[in-house]
Length: 119
Image 1 (spheres, one colour):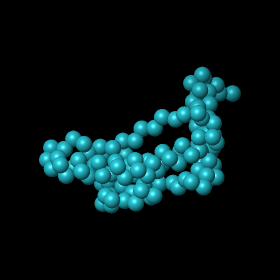
Image 2 (image 1 turned 120 degrees about the vertical axis):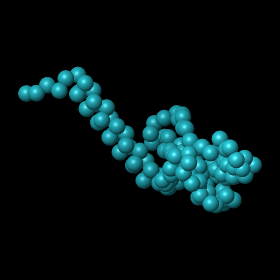
Image 3 (image 1 turned 90 degrees about the vertical axis):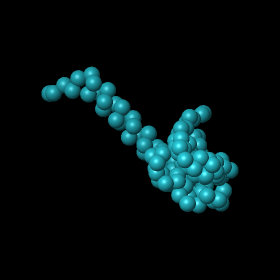
Image 4 (image 1 turned 135 degrees about the vertical axis):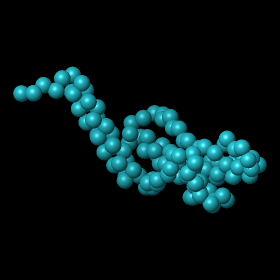
């Protein structure tokens, strides 16, 4: 019999727990009527979409709005996941403008405002 050692056992335990947590989260998303899966880019240089004055009910069509929607969906599953509080980080780049500063600020604040209003 081959012994995988302490690190092999640790890796196996962590993998098993991760797969179980993933199954629980997937089930929570499927069972929740308020959640929708959405994909968004975490690259700050990725296009944030062109719908600046988005309808607050749909979180907008930009990446920041989609990220806020995903956070809202995760919060909606907190009881199923058995957590009292969560911490979320939503990246939102594009603030280091070296030209067209006014235009960049208006665009970014518009996206931020739309996402926060929907949240």
